[in-house]
Image (cartoon, rainbow, N blue to C red; front, side, top):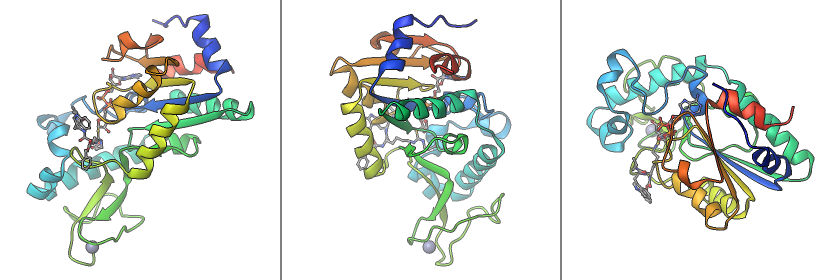
Length: 247
Ligand code: BV8
Ligand code: ZN
């Protein structure tokens, strides 16, 4: 079912001087990466991601948490960007070509926006492709896939952890500052493929809504944002986004 896109929504995208797009796991679903709340099938379906994506879980069972992230790292590396990622690359090119600003904020850790060609991507929740030592400052590059051991060890004897933001951890200060500045300055805020329940990312749209600027949601299912945006476009990002971006 293709979602009708109101003409004024198309005009808002075509005329905006500064567009902020916040993406979540839904934009990578069509690349075959399960969303955060989809149960990854098999062995992993017995776990709630929110129980594994915490420092406490890593401290309690570093082997299990390392296996979970290394399996996900493999899925991300094997995935390809989809039409939704590519539409945002074209949108960035169009906005900057007309002298406007484009800010892409992502909660995703899969690196697919960058692989599609988006630049200056603000990774609010870090990246599964980057790992660092939980004890010292080492951040080894080009780790073998799969990892050689679970947990993987640093030369200092510490354990390597994924470079993601776990629940209860602060977002990278520079990323959050950039996100807040952009959300407070934009004249169009688009939320794409996110359940809009994880904070502080989910609160960014309020910095636009509270100023009365245009806001838009592109999501497969309703979320707490759906009744609060200027336009709620229900559908898959890979199908809707290309129609929002003039070819
Ligand atoms: C922090 C990385 C403080 C790891 C993730 C208020 C203020 C501040 C914090 C809180 C607060 N209230 C509660 C908190 C705590 C917590 C929080 O928000 N909890 C929630 C659950 C209530 N927040 C935190 O802990 C944050 N830290 O605030 O620290 C602090 C400050 C100073 C000092 C110390 C501490 C950290 C949050 C980051 C957690 N890490 N990820 C990993 O990935 O393993 S969050 C995780 O959820 C993922 O990153 C994911 O991106 C994110 C949100 O999920 P979504 O992306 O939305 O994915 P989801 O599956 O939920 O939804 C997908 C959507 O897509 C669905 O709606 C679906 O309909 C749609 N969809 C599916 N297919 C498609 C589609 N849409 C379009 N097209 C499709 N094809
Ligand atoms: Zn170390």
